[in-house]
Length: 288
Image 1 (cartoon, rainbow, N blue to C red):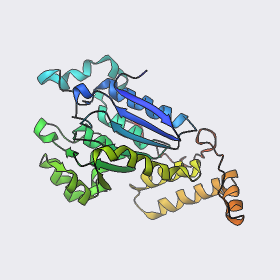
Image 2 (cartoon, helix red, strand yellow; image 1 turned 180 degrees about the horizontal axis):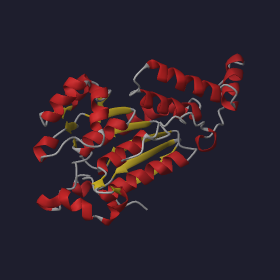
Image 3 (spheres, helix red, strand yellow; image 1 turned 60 degrees about the vertical axis):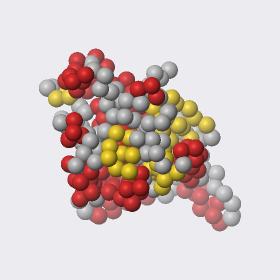
């Protein structure tokens, strides 16, 4: 049972919903841990081919839960639910724990931002593959107004999505970004009326269900991880390992047979059992 989120799966799509509407879905340690657990669940379920991340109520996420007062962030180090985040004298950023778990998802992730997304609400979504927003959404990169810096690995994600200059403007200027500006910058792919948002997210997520689940999972890993590659030769090596791993797989042979027979392919490969490991060269950096 989850306390701060809801999880449901149907028709090949898992929906993860931030669910503290009375707190404007403010992010706390429990939500962080439950988001990690929810993505663990979607990864382990071979019936799930895509994930939608959204929220209850009128707000997607109001940012960190500041109910602890002026010492909210200082008190985090005493939170027993964060004990596993300590490495020596350094504590991992809690927003980054969730965003990196989304980054590692084996299933495509669509963010359906139903309203204002502030702070960690505006950064956790950056690891999703597709972002759509309601016409009531806005994005608050207000960290400098809180005496903080952008978190959730957003210094890696945000410039890759909207460009370095725009990312600097939004974060150093503590900007509230409208849905229209977010669309123009490429942060979101489209804007919908609120009552159309989740159905549209399902329509987009459904596109990821027609192909091989194993190939989709590997493609997601390859695209995201090669975003930081120093040279295209790194991508060529990864491509070559992936093609070698898949070319004789049952899904690939079924796809060729289906093409020749002019029918839909019936893919049976399971991410839980059949996903090849092509990352033996250290693609999972450790936290130091």
